[in-house]
Image (cartoon, rainbow, N blue to C red):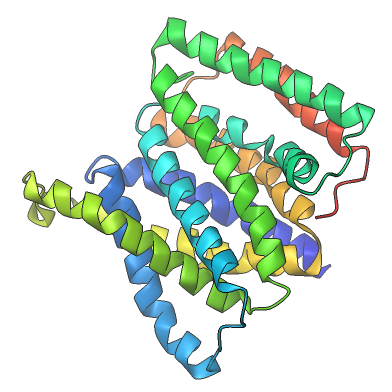
Length: 292
């Protein structure tokens, strides 16, 4: 029952991250969104981390740094990409992260891919190709998005799959709060020089709307603190694979909210891509061999 509750929470809160990022992009450059949400989240979590008096275990700092760097890249690529595509297309492209977890296991852990996983991978790649090719023709942010946006989102999907695998390994040694805090610190540091560049170019917080401020606060408390803590808890008591499957739930939620909030359009090309990607991931995950 606990797993079901966590899964539902991740699905809802994860979808809010997409919506809030899209809203924040109307007032903020992408790098400033990343800097603000994670810097604020780190400050909020700091007292809780200090209270736990956590010590770095020898030999694990490289893994902590890798987790933070990958999480930072994921957030930066996602925010940059979402400015050039729809939340529907972006979230559809995240569904294969469960399959990418298996591919990462094949490449780095020498785990064999089953016949189902290979078939699913081919179907998923065809679906992603349909989305990118369709976006080249449509060039419409409210439907399939633009090629640049979809390529950036595809890169974000890859970094997310890496993050899930690395988090699973870190959770054997550290509390989810510490892992989240370290990720936020890395994200804040990495995005700082880019954020400073935007401020030097003339960006002013005085021009930000109330919606922009509320979006950043929502990204801080919901999409950063709550989301990272809950998904790490889910991964800790299940597996990296189960954690990656939450993309199904997030996609369902976004499919409802995207057209309502942003008037995004579900096109025939989008539905054709769905017909390849979703069954592809379903076929691949039926093998039951992904347990990272």
